[in-house]
Length: 427
Image (tube, rainbow, N blue to C red; front, side):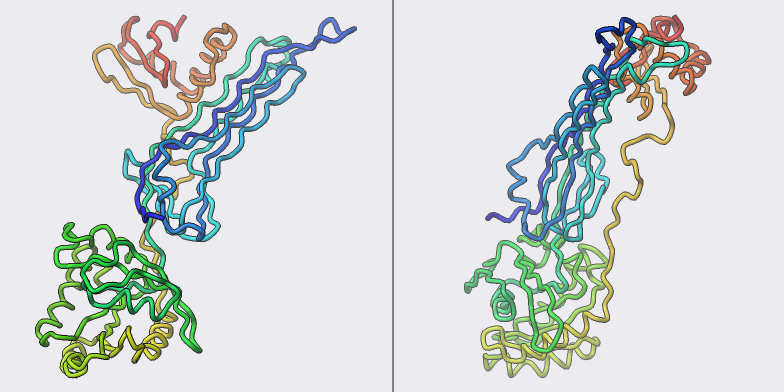
């Protein structure tokens, strides 16, 4: 399956069912009262994190995801059925952004975590709900609340305890194959690995952990050189970095430079990434040149306060000691919550009941969750519904706000998908 770590999709919740206008028509009950049932609630679009998926590949074929609409209310006080929720499974580590604003809505970083991304519209009330001491036979019902449509950008950031970094041909894939259940492609040329690989490492007598091989890091990676910019984000969540350095067929100056190149790229991508704890593994110790150079390289790293392990991914020399050390170090490193999702309960609602803005001469746009919902759920073909609509506008202060404006009778006010002339509010 192709590795895809970013997709843009549209999600649409279910529309609420319309309320019904009906009256009892039973034998021997000539003056039957209102009996129109409420509409059903529209289905929610819910994202669920699962470790059964490791890529957003399947969603890359999807342009639109829609939950089921609620059914309309029925006579005899029968409530319409609720629409079915749409549960969309995504890999653990998926970030959900509003594609229009760039706002992070939710971070799905735990297996089984479910989040409502687009809430279904509530069902409209039937005429049985509008009875009162003075209104015995109301011929009014609400429309269902409209669906919510969102354009989303999904970004996958792999969750791993250890990020395996290093220049191409440092032997990362061979090393990961030798220490875990991962089976990345191995060959003797740069950029063998074109996708991040995850593997579970189980050191003998120590706690297991997850390691990710991050491909494509070369000088300039944070600016898009090579493949690095595509994959640097995948090490942001890791708790510790294992930097694999090839010490064969190079002099000390080159080896140190190679180490510095990778560290500079990590820091250039994000300061927090550059400051993560680092363990260095001097790889390819099965080769004579590497064994000869190791003491000099180790001395240089010790001056910087960095611990170095001599290892060979091919023969597993020194690997067990390294893995046990990593396992013990992870116990002392807290998981960093670097990604903060929006914590507001209602992301898409305005704080004020309404806001009025003159967008062009004589044309005003009115925005606000409450007033837009009211317009969408009003049946403007029904005189009783229109009268109730105006009463609610007055109650929320909208009519008084209009009265204080220097507007002409022909000025137009757009609310949601409806347009009203100024004079219509005062008829």
